[in-house]
Length: 296
Image 1 (cartoon, helix red, strand yellow):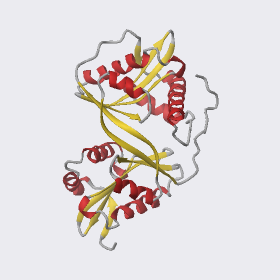
Image 2 (tube, rainbow, N blue to C red):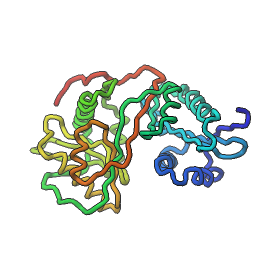
Image 3 (cartoon, helix red, strand yellow):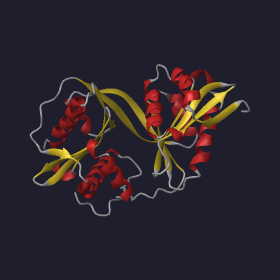
Image 4 (cartoon, helix red, strand yellow):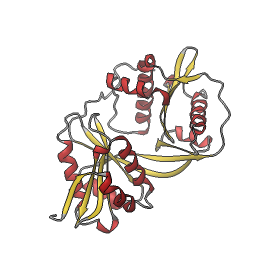
């Protein structure tokens, strides 16, 4: 496509056109804004006949996986622009040996987008609900909950990885994997400690979770301490903390089939949308297929 140009994002040149292009599309607007704040160098803009028609973005190039977003204006779809964006993405990702796979999402019911990514080598990994809650503060928990400390990292890591590993096994997500701890992750946790919390029960960490703006992430309860009410109390605390910080609407993502969805519903969360998470591998997956030692 001789009239198609894909080049790095320049806010002063592109922001107005992208905002107009994404008007009314909340999902892609949020994805774009998130990347613009956290990793603006990972955004590339597609112009066709001097018209901004789409963009490509990445969440980063340092981890094993990068979240990739591709958007093309409806009236320009079917012209090969999306395929050119994927081609550009793959050329770029091949330069980064650390990146083993890219990850994206397609809204349930959007068959054309799902067919497009499958045609380009992606497959569905699992499906996830986006849930939202808007309402009053919840009753305070009597369980001791505190901010994360650096010494918590080894235990936090095991709890999170074991909880999510067992959840993926339960709902049938393949491949199964367990991520080993790293100093890079530990350093990032410490930088973000004000948004990380743990629940202590009899001197042991029972749950951990992250506040990310209006989103609740990585909530995990130690597998052998589940079904005791800790999860509900912990999520209630995190939700209240977010509201105290000024958030009116709280969001989270939960994998389809994860029994934790019932817990979230009991706290007032409602389904907003369903997405299919897709992935494509560029290199062999270096994550462990099983935990080295199932502590819990």
